[in-house]
Image (cartoon, rainbow, N blue to C red; front, side):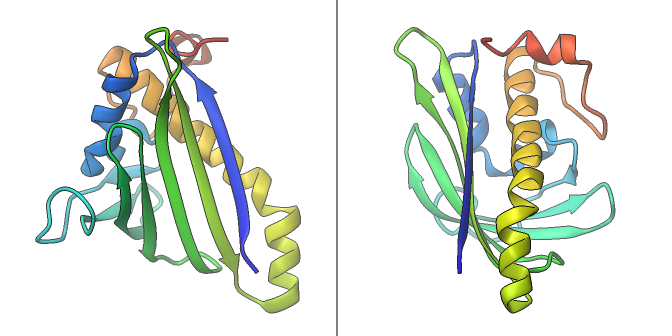
Length: 168
C-alpha cells in the first residue's frame, strides 16, 4: 500500500526564479546537501523523459526520471534505481505563486515500502518523519540557493543564513 507525505515551505523568493531552478533537472546538486552530482543521462535533455543520475555524498546513487510537468508550477519524477528498502518512489516538487511576488515551495512523495506488513508499519510510523525532514532540507536549500546563488555542498549553511530566504 502506498504512503504519501507532503510539505510546503513559504519563501520570500519570486516564483519564476524558483521554477527556473526546479525545472533545471540537473541542478539538484546545487541545493541538496545529499547530492554530490546530478548529470542528465538520457538523450532527452529537458521535459518529460529527462533522466538524471544522482551520486550522493554517502556514495549511493539514485536514477530519477521526469514523468509529468505542469509548466511554471511543478514536476513529478519517478525514482527508477535506488538502494532504499522501497518497492517504488514517485516524488513531486514545485512552487505556488502567492500573488505578492513570493512563492511557496512544495515537495511530496508517494512510496511503497518492501517487507509486507512490517514494511507497511515502517512506512506509516517511521518513514514519514524521515522523509519530511529530508524534504524540508531540500526545499530550504533550494530557497537559499535561489536567494544567494550559492551552492549548498555537503553541509547546510547556518540557520541564520537559511532563514534569510524564508518567510516566517
